[in-house]
Length: 168
Length: 208
Image (cartoon, rainbow over all chains, first blue to last red):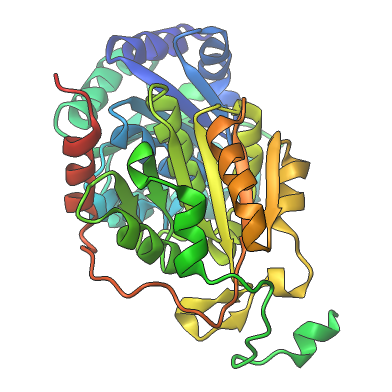
């Protein structure tokens, strides 16, 4: 199933990403496993997603590139830390595996899932949704270009059309 | 409920330590130019700016409470060629104390953390923090798994702790217990995070 996850990791490598921070989510399983197995990648499990935003700002201070991977619920844990990104104009790439979205079976996921885009946009992020496996490589290349060449903050939403809805 | 909390008021300045931060922090840090420094908001930002200005080897926050340790981690992983120091306070660290666990499992040897513990939220009226009420952040750092930890309450303990920060084989953490009755240094610094970021990068990134 996961060819698109291979595409995603390959693009990150092309753009010389060297730090991956995450709170685990099924949608990021391949990214996490590949980063753990990659001797050139710092693979950093967090206790809360906002640590990843601060960590990647620190990485930029040191001239390194990173990506923060989290579930949609994690965006809610990051909101004040996004002040650092907006105020400091830090480049920031956030990969969001969506819950509370297309076909969600757990109502607890709905409020934050539906709030991801307005919250990220309010804090200065450009967001893009990816629904189809064949779009992952191109969208990731676009996102990495905007972040690492143009210094933008970009949220890439891996939707439940892409990763599959979880039914409870 | 903790009786000391019940008895607490905003004006209660009962100290967790006796050291004056204006002397103890510079003594513990040593030559600030030996480090790349990330400072949390409020008191430690002032401690750091007072030590470092006009040099630009520091990035100090004025918000994003709880972010300093994780910022230092990202910087330490990005710059294995340099020693990275995080200066944080008890209130700032308590907001994201889990970041000690994240540091511990990575354990970069070039990352050192000083928590300047005055037991109070100094910026907001000196309300007691949890460390005035029995919470021991050094024990929490040890419990997280950070291998080199010291708690400093007396001036004659500073030299050993400073050596630990510089020479430990893994990440290190020093809890510096100070009095809330001696305020941080008064210093003007830019609150422009973009300017501070660009200044830091220009001063510290290798050419090319």
